[in-house]
Image 1 (cartoon, each protein chain N blue to C red):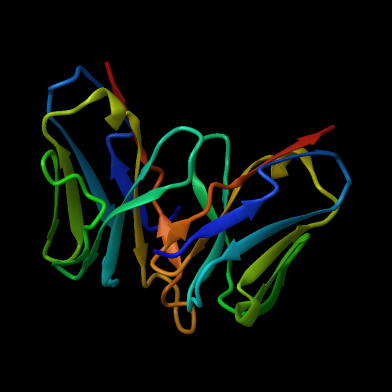
Image 2: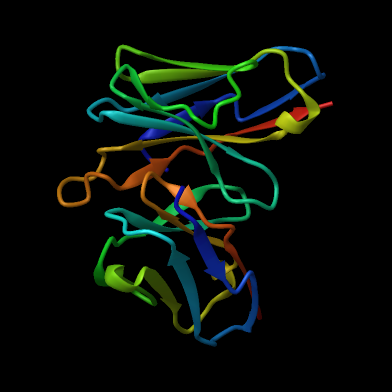
Length: 117
Length: 104
């Protein structure tokens, strides 16, 4: 989707290794989200940022996952150490790309497909 | 938290047929979106529709917020409509999706 870039697009690692994902949205929005989508399921919210602050991280496995948002624009999601069950697509989304009254409309990046062996 | 249920889970259509996908949610919301996830995994916005009715070409959607459901209508389906359709509500809780297959 235009406006949200993610990298890398694919990543294969072995269990217990570390991995990082990047989300690079265009500027001019306030809210950024990371989702995990396991094959055959709907996306699950991991963390929501409002500017630089965390609004909701209740479903983030904090013993191994961490995320930060830099200067209210770019964001990184890290897994350390990875487990087999972390194999999934990691999606970044933002709101604020559409004008009112659709300011809360979410737009997604293409995702990063992670395979943990 | 809010529960989101989509039906049917799977739908197979012949090209040219019409279909209706349903999304029920357990609490009042001020935010509801329909997405199409294409075979490459990209989530594509279809409608931002917390209430009311919208139409875009062969697709239309209606949300009745007071009764906690939303409907997505696809008319004259095409093979390119195949994929998974998701409803997401509130702080973006997603349903499990409806997998649509349109056969030529």
